Image (cartoon, rainbow, N blue to C red; front, side, top):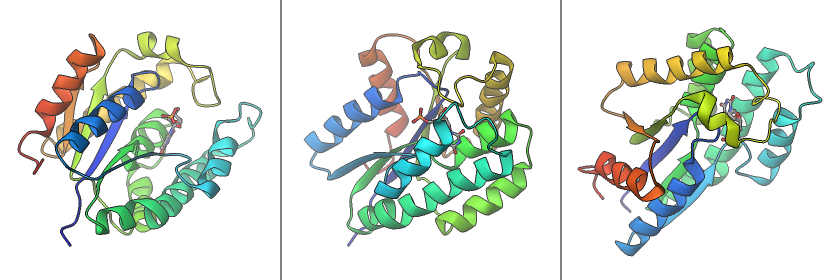
Length: 203
Ligand code: TMP
């Protein structure tokens, strides 16, 4: 069977990825596609426990290397349990966050070894790369207002400026895969930008 399309959505916290994922799913289903909407961290039963560990603000002692590996462990479980089987069954997979989040948040944000993070994640995913990544660009100072302040969201605006810089560096390095769209405007306006980014990707 034809392998499905793997689409990932990226952006800083509070940017509206979930709303857009649901609108995109609805649109693609109307066109007759079978679509799976999922997310990281926490897209599996075991992953939801890893998510709880990662985001609990009480875990101030979580080492940054452990943080990278926990995100990668969550991803490995998710890829092998959910994403790869869905793609193999011909489904389109819309996944909120993937390896790019680790590169941006842990690599650029925390200033850790970006190549190392890429290698660990290459191994964790068996080399799975999205066909298309849509990055919702926003000013972190504005989007963070909409968040609840979990362990990551409690980090400073300086941290988030580096995360954003990381995402934009990925866009610069991989313009074919990684499309930047503005997260400004109504949800319908943003949704139409998502569809523009999707044009010519076999949908
Ligand atoms: P979410 O709020 O989009 O569900 O993501 C949870 C948080 O985890 C969010 O602050 C981004 C962060 N994150 C990383 O730092 N690295 C990663 O690899 C992923 C997937 C998420």
